[in-house]
Structures are given as C-alpha cells and as structure tokens.
Amino acid sequence: MKMLVIVFRESLVEQVHALLNDYDVSAFSELHNVAGKGATGLTSQFFLAPTTNRMILAAVSEQLAYRLIDAFAHFRLTQEAAKGDSTFPLHVFVLPCEQAV
Image 1 (cartoon, rainbow, N blue to C red):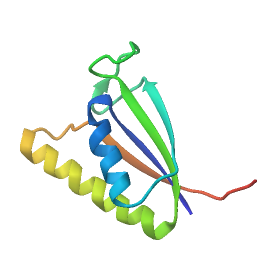
Image 2 (image 1 turned 60 degrees about the vertical axis):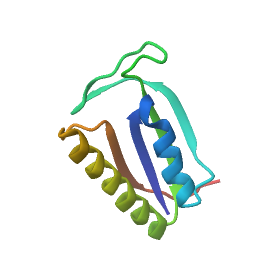
Image 3 (image 1 turned 30 degrees about the vertical axis):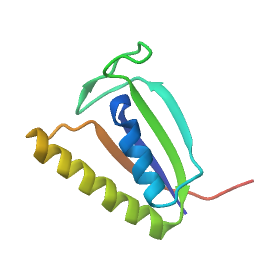
C-alpha cells in the first residue's frame, strides 16, 4: 500500500475530488484550513481565505497510487500551461503505508 498526501489550495477542491472520484477513491481523510509555506508561497491561517490549503490522506494500492500520481501530474501540467505559471498550488507526495490495526 501507499499513502498519498495531496496538498492543494481550497479553490481546487472540486477538481481534486473529481479526480479521486474518477479513480474510485472513496475512502480518505481530509484536513481543512492547512497552513504552511512552500514553493507556491505562504498560506493563510484564516478560514476560507483565498490561500487556504487542504490536505487529503489516501491509503491506496501501489498500482492505484501511481495511476493517481500520473493523473494529478497531468492535471497540474495542464493547469500550469493554461496559466503560464509553474507554481500551481497542488502537490502530491507518496509514502509507504502499512495498516497496523
């Protein structure tokens, strides 16, 4: 299994949920109002500010993880090309995952 950590701007929630739905990912944990600082800048700590982030944690099979990574990479590249900006606020990380209980 793999754990996908998907960090994205609040404004992308519908697109991210649609991608997960397209790949039949129905079980995940979602954290709202995630603050931080990274390549796409500082995020606000104010609820529903334009720069508020969300984070989704999804434990999926290894095969599905890499299919999702490809889908998110394609989505990000498409958005960056459309906006002419290489700092699109979507990041996906993959970690090994083993259910303990």
